[in-house]
View (tube, rainbow, N blue to C red):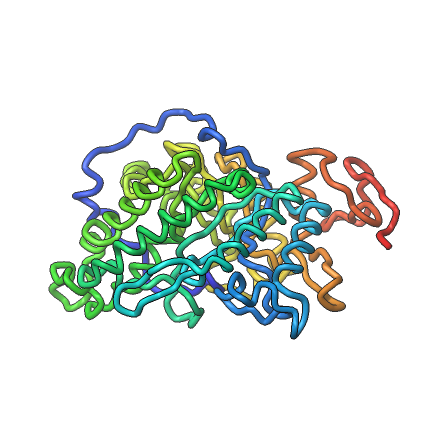
Length: 416
């Protein structure tokens, strides 16, 4: 999501009936085939628009190579990737494409084709990530009501009145995945594809208004509101199921997820299993936001019972607490807790929200500098992988101690 905003409460899990049907067992599992990623990373989104002026979601359009008003998004991606790898910020990063920015779009029928230059920009970005040894969670479709961001998913496409638009979205996903699968570097750089960010949570926000229900008028509740169980079962689940089926057919060698806004971590095992049945995925991406995560250990421990591998694609302070989540100093204690504890609860990776919380540019576009949160991620990287990165000037100072760390740190001469 773009600067997370609370829109609606999670749906009532008791109403999932038609989709749930049966309870799933919770067997022990190994990692999904090919899902081998670093424990640490960030929800990177895209290179900062502060210097390139490429807003959400325009960075992969012609703006990608435009340097008329400052460093291009292309040069920033290269610099960010090198900095992330060199400073222990994790070689697993969540990068947002938002396919709509790449499309030739018809207002009635939706996707017509891709702009080939924009597809080439995606290839270039993935190749630059690969050069720094970074794997990505690639987010394809995104919608966040109220943000005003350009080139978002059109939620009306799944309201039953825009079936051609819906079918063309599936075609767009098929075309894109066939494209990246045909490029060996692209394919090897993509650890997992997030077909749609927080599909249930964000689309529930849209269908919270009964006037948006389109052909699904049966999902209007008697009180004039929306029946969440009906929306989830009748509108959203068929859509995400078609997304997954389409993706697997187009590029079966890739792994897929549809990110969850946090409801899948639930100390009530029956409700957790019901939530699992809503997600046709290979790997679970579960987002965790809480101002005091240590106070709810049973919820996070439920991650051990999930029937598929999982990772935290977004981890931060409480929902809406942007003054904490996006402040590299304020977020450090909360992000420390997530990094220190979620691994024991089964998380294969913890991606801190967001890249800008981990490193900033205090003296202009060519001065990336770790924040307190960045140092926290760095220490977690050291703890989980040993001496796998090089600090360009000196060993880092531990954020919670005055003494300098001497282990797992290799000194290099300053960069010219």
